[in-house]
Image (tube, rainbow, N blue to C red):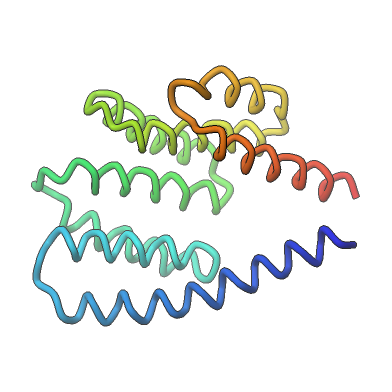
Length: 170
């Protein structure tokens, strides 16, 4: 019962925080003409909407992609692949999520972007958890911890893994 209360509390906190972020991002979009700022704000909006409205999340992903076309913003392209993969992950489409994570991982690898290598590594482990392969997810984290992940991200992910197992078994 305590775990469910904590989960509900965390979800409500995220929703309230998301609304404040949404308002400030929309305000910033309305007052800037800088492409990289617009793309980042659209990507942030898509992230905010993951837990509120997936259709809106996809709309802002598409807007970001419109601005990304024919531009060389590698870090924003990585953020796009990550968010698009997370969008499909949230929708439950593991195959499309993996395809987008793969695209992002390859770009992160070719550009030596450690931050996004960490993010995509964590996303692969989340896919393993979703598929019920907890051992593979744990093994994946532990094998890659020195190269792509930090101890803090491993602890957070293992905590989420334990909560997932406890909630699904109750």
